[in-house]
Length: 370
Length: 78
Image 1 (tube, each protein chain N blue to C red):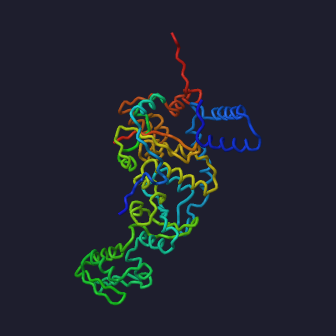
Image 2: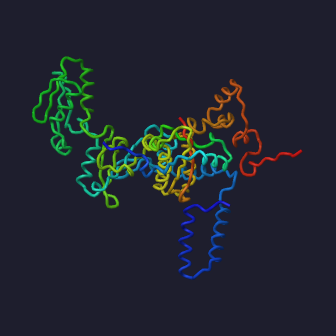
Image 3: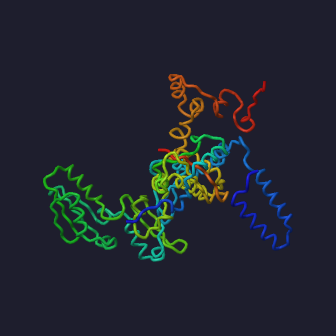
């Protein structure tokens, strides 16, 4: 008999205490109830040989068919566009190197989370600002071979950046002759070709003034009585270093990044959370245990692996199972060349050759005793 | 500069290095060999934080699952 799990134990204790208040129960009655619960728990446990993977695949797959027709993009949290629905599920399951819309949820420490001013200050430190973001225009003056940068005074004031700062930063890009006139800076890279000037203009536009690279936007929003920062773009390590950021709750929707910063177990939790949230958002109710199995499989090797040709299905040991999945001829040819042997342990191989599959009652084999 | 400790993050469950006798017991209970355990990389931030070495087995106590608490094990590999 398997002992009861923690959650069942807690629920049982709570209900027994409640029932005991209403009518006084004898010790033997309570014992009988507990015995009954233990027996029932063991009765509903998954049997050995039960094809849990197939059940999980169907349980996630069927709601997936309903998702296909729903929206691809959805106006997500606080004006930030987030990929949702089936494209998002595919993205997680395929373990893409970068999600199409990386988003961070930055929580703040006590003292920062209730203060709008302080929260805004942290958000400004996160938001990456380039020259292009604060300039009204960056124009190439082809006649004089100059670059004319016209800055927007309101944007500068909003971001709390001074013109001197910008000039200093631009000097680092390339030390060229600069003339400043009010909010206009004229850069003269000297005698260069048109192509070089164009490249120079590009570099000036993308010069990082402050904040974290690749984070395009950071918005603050009040949620459950505290200020939370949502960002477009994701860079967990850099955000963790900032003063006032709560490093125990801040997360991103980029599973690979979570794996890198917080480890494989955190990545497993992130996969479960992301898939569950995407399904919930579409109003689809899928049992978490199926998603947990999927996440377990994706993380067994200590590194998040995609499902599919480049991941789980492509690494199966059986040749026939791989051939049945995708690019049949290549697998068979490769196996033939190398003289590989299929030991027929899996389900797919046995279906192909028409033998009982090792699932359910098929897991049991009989051996004659002589 | 702040130091990042991954073990305090809410996504990270508790990781404990398993004693050698406990490993033997575990392998005996499930009737498996060491290489059948799920793996975790030695370069994993949490493994580094708790100072475990390749070859050791880590016990992971996951919370928040439907069971309330679930225990799994991972073998540290290079």
